[in-house]
Length: 186
Ligand SMILES: [Zn+2]
Image (cartoon, rainbow, N blue to C red; front, side, top):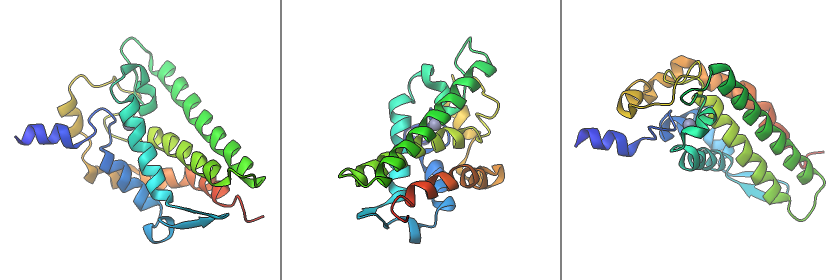
């Protein structure tokens, strides 16, 4: 059934479809450059890591109304301001963690590759939440969906380019990613 396919093939709780997040990452970062990146003595699929991190965040938190703020939404009986405060805090924590891991990699210990991967992973989670905030079904910390199908229909992938989310993600997380990827170029 068409309806079932719609629900099963998309991330209706995480909110841009998983493919929507992938589309944003692949528009922000040129796949020719960011699929096989040499950093320090590591080879890293930067886009692949960001996408997996984003997908995992949905898998881990996409069923829990408690974590609505990680998808730029609010849960029932929560004010928009309270949800936004949690969201801002989440973004800040993930970005700080990414910098901390990148700084550890800069020191050149034996765990360099892992530290860089952890940093990119954290950035993927922050970027996911940020990207969700641009979805027409999320903007303004809307209530966590009780009607998933309607929710899906309000955020087709084709709507992505009109929201400015690609440019915004690039502007916010581009410098952070550069900071990580330059861990060995000093
Ligand atoms: Zn989400």
